[in-house]
Amino acid sequence: MKPTLLLLAAGMGSRYGGLKQLDGLGPNGETIMDYSIYDAIKAGFGKIVFVIRKDFEQDFRDKILSKYEGHIPAEVCFQSLDALPEGFSVPEGRQKPWGTNHAVMMAAKTIHEPFCVINCDDFYNRDAFMVIGRFLSQLPEGSTNQYAMVGFRVGNTLSENGTVARGICSKDEQDNLTTVVERTEIVRCAEDGSQQGDDAQPIRFKDEEGKWVVVDDNTPVSMNMWGFTPDYFEHSEAFFKQFLSDPKNMSNLKAEFFIPLMVNKLIVEKTASVKVLDTTSKWFGVTYAADRQATVDKIRQLIQEGVYPQQLF
Image (cartoon, rainbow, N blue to C red; front, top):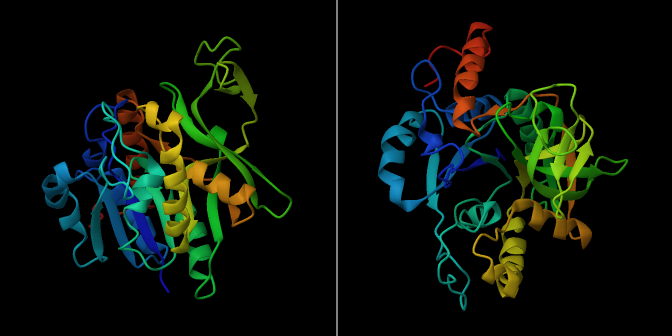
C-alpha cells in the first residue's frame, strides 16, 4: 500500500509574517511544499492531504491544489479552534491554534493507510522522503504502534537569522526513540545567549528555567517528519481529552498539543515504538523573513545541479 503525505499548512507563520506556505520561492513561483510533494511522488507516495484553515481555502485551492491535478490525488481538511471533543469548549480569549498534533487529528476521517506528517514550510530534501517512504511502504498490512521519525542532525537544521524550534531526541541501541522534548529556542550562541554569528559557537537550547544548555551538533532532532499508522488517531483523541482536562492547559491561552508530546507519552507508556531514521540531509526553510533569499538561492542551486527540473508541475 502506498503511503500518504499529510502536510500541515494551517499556521500563519507569525515569525515570518503572512501566509508563508503560499510564498513562491522557485523560478516559476513554486512553494517549498511543491518541492516536498515532488520529492514525495518520487519516493512512491500515493496521495497528499493538506490541513489548512478554512478562511484561506479558496486562495489555497486556486494557488496550490490546482497544480497537482493529474500528478497525485489531493484532499483538504481543516483545523479550527473549536474542533474539540464533546464536552470541551474554547477558553475565553484563546486565539492560538491547538498545535501540530491537533492538526494531525483533523485528518482522521481522510487517512486510512500509513502516512507521513510534515510541515509545509520546511525543505526536507529528497533523501528524507525516500527513507520514510521506504519504512512506511514496508510495514506489514494492518500494522499498529510501529512508527518512525526522520532524525535530522541539529547542526544541519539551524537558521542564521534567529532561534528555531526542534524536538530534541534520544534513542537506544536499536535506534528506537526514547525521548523527544520540544525546545522552542535553539541557536548557536554564547553562554549568555548572545548571538555573534560565529560557527565556532556551540549550539544551545533554552531550558524550562531559562538557562542555555549545550547540545552536540549531531544530536538527532525532530523536524516534524513522522511516520504513523492510522491507529495513531485513536491514541491522539484519547490523550487530547486528558490534555484539555488539565487546568493549566486551559488557563494557558498559548498551550499547544505538540506531536512530540503525544509521541513521548506513547513511548514512556510502552504503547508504541518509534524508529529513528537517520539522514544527513540539510534542512532549510523560511523561519524568518531574512531566510527568504537564502532559500531562493539554495533552490536555484539544486535546479542547476539537476536535482529538480526548472518547472515542477
